[in-house]
Amino acid sequence: MNGGDAIADVLAAQGVGALFTLCGGHISPILVAAKKRGLRVIDTRHEATAVFAADATARLTGTPGVAAVTAGPGVTNTITALKNAQLAQSPLVLIGGATATVLKRRGALQDIDQMALVRPHVKLATSVRRVKDLAPAVERAFAVAREGVPGPVFVECPVDLLYDERVVREWYSAKSAAKSLPERLQQWYLARHVDGLFAGARARTPSAKAAPPVERADASAVASTAARLRKATRPVLLVGSQAVAGPVAEVAAAVRTLGIPVYLSGTARGLLGATDALQLRHRRKEALREADVAILAGVPCDFRLDYGRHLGRETALVSVNRSREDVAKNRRPKIAVVGDPGRFLAALARELGGIDRTAWRDKLRARDAERDAEIAEQERAAEPGFVNPLALCRAIDGALEDDAILVADGGDFVATASYVVRPRGPLGWLDPGVFGTLGVGAGFALGAAVARPGAPVWVLFGDGSLGYSLAEFDTFARHGIPVVAVVGNDACWSQIRRDQVEILKDDVACMLRHTDYHAAAEALGGRGFLLKDPAQAAGVLSEARQAARDGRAILVNAHIARTEFRKGSLSI
Image (cartoon, rainbow, N blue to C red; front, top):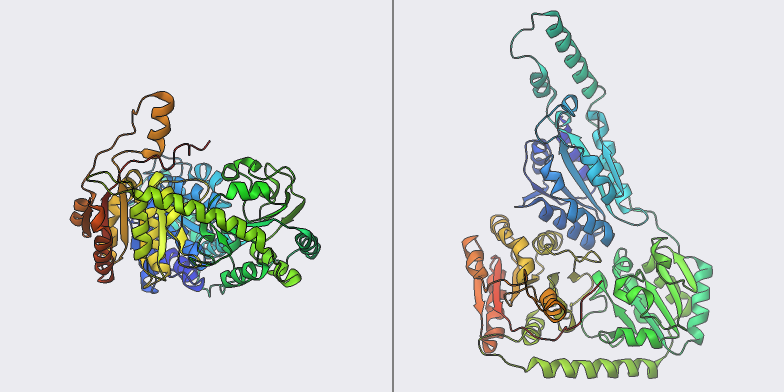
């Protein structure tokens, strides 16, 4: 057994089904050992994609996803994806290669201080120094990634801990017999160093997969919230990604039992399906300002709620969050609960049952219907040679299967889609989260396809964000990953251009081309479609969906018109 075997045994015991990677000599033993144990090893064209894929599997399965990358630039290429997972509170384990222990800071290939770079972006960063410590370090990484506020963990594994002892001793032995006293002393030192590396290393049975500790909801906070809701006439519930990190069916049942008008954000989109009468989609700010009680279940008062200013001055805020920092960010709540939002909602439903606020709900639904009618009117606007983006999103919504998973990667086009495209069920929507990272698309699609075999995976790209993922159509083709990707191609970075031109009167650095992305996808092993005629949208999407069922990765290059639909959406 070598160090790669020890790590692979832990991954198998933890229930990891796939290891995402970009190969490198520093980590090869891990990849080979994982394959021998039946894990699916999926190699990507960029290390960030591997980490994004691990992130997606974690969100969909609850088990931390795992990526392994080589030393130096392999690790540095993951920083954005690690930070995205940290801010999205997504549990994953990143295993990074490193230079041999005896060569640290001696000018070895790809030898940098990786720990200093990674540490600010993870819950825990640890560097292993002996073979016998590899398995315990990885087991601890899984536990830390899931406990408390979930997040990424980094385990640095020097290359001389991963290969067979015989191979490592050959690396450290002289090419010719040592003759001088200094040479003999050096050989003796290196032999003793290797003895230390492998001391106590032996085959071991990995610890069984441990469930994260179950936190009980604060009974007094539950009772206080129930008392406020009994008196409330205009309650609003806002549910975020954190609330669906546990038993999703239990959370959905609790929301339905409570009967409070609800807005869903992040990964919680789709929690109640596409058409539930409780769920509202538009004019959230108005509802929060009018609410007498607002419950934020896993949602901080950050820029998405205008730092708390979306809430009315008299609104009684109940904030439930795993993070002690986020529970009172920017707005002091009347009731602050540090804990799992999903379990809090379940306990609240048991305590309170349902409350009938039909008049309030009907008022909010009337606003939703009014906004839907406005959007429908805007869908009819036509520009020759281009597809109205709202109409395209409506066609996508009509083409989605009941078990489809939607991946959102883009700015203006994807944000437009969020008004129209309805996730079909719980955990049916994946977006980057609060960091707003472009480039998650291919990785999230890979992770979704692995986590939910057989489920249709749709990716909505802006033409800007597609630039980060296009090469991964080669990955889709090599690994037989069928996806339907739709790129809203308006030949510019619309979300930036719109405000930049209005404020600064210049579109510098905002313009792209109507590039033949569909042809590039074909060249990389997928299948491409070009869509310019609005009348053909439904037919093209239907054909694309069928081609994906046949096992192909599909890219629909939709030339969309530029619109003012999201004018004034600049966030700071």
